[in-house]
Length: 364
Image (cartoon, rainbow, N blue to C red):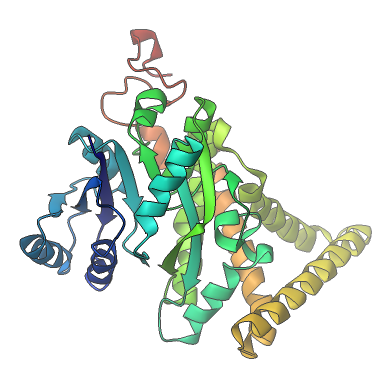
């Protein structure tokens, strides 16, 4: 029998992006012996997203529209699992476009490596016409900006802790469980780390490249980091301690150091010497990174702007991590009020990945 693949896309208010995304997917080639379809889960969009998807479905029988009333990506993916997808599930994003050989390369890599989860790297593109979008691109494509995210900054082929826009063997969900619907962000990272803990293999192939369009606004990017991305890193550690990674926590240490150094220096001058030295080192690294990105993208404005942009990014992300930890300590984090990672799980945490929870697991 031919291999079967279900492409899953979860969207909300993406009328400008979903069309080009679907167009790139439907141009996939090298799949003569593969049965595949595209399921798009719309999180009750308030724009024309649903109409765009349904118009595509009327023209192309591979495209199916689903309503995702929970509005969360993890819920859409679990909904797809309930709808009996193919042997492989390919989770893609609407903010990206994919080359014609994207799926065929994923399948070839899965066959060759016997990996359970396979992905590639992101080619980050400017998401808008303004300079702010170019700043976001420069911030997120340098190791000084995002640390050791190999799928963003380049990596060699081999095992990884996570990969974007990945191909999953359906069998991995039988071993590791489902996606945690409480995580508005980082749900893919958490699941991949949980799958690894359950014995699965996650594989990165840098020959597989998708074009990802970043946020169109620098300030919008910062707000997203402060309100969503950073706090949900902390929430993920609480729900899934095995998913902790130092690169996600370092901004919290940085923000705590900046706040503590600024507050304590007037009282203990000797602290000021260490604080000042650390900030000089940070500024030097930021200036060097800014100059490198200015040369890379041929935009001299980056030399002056990026050092300050790096600081704002790192500091506000760190503040978001600290705010998430504070909410966890005070019992006010949103993930603490929901008792199951997905409906019917029967317990608080997704680990260990048992097929059926026992009554003793409830409320854990």
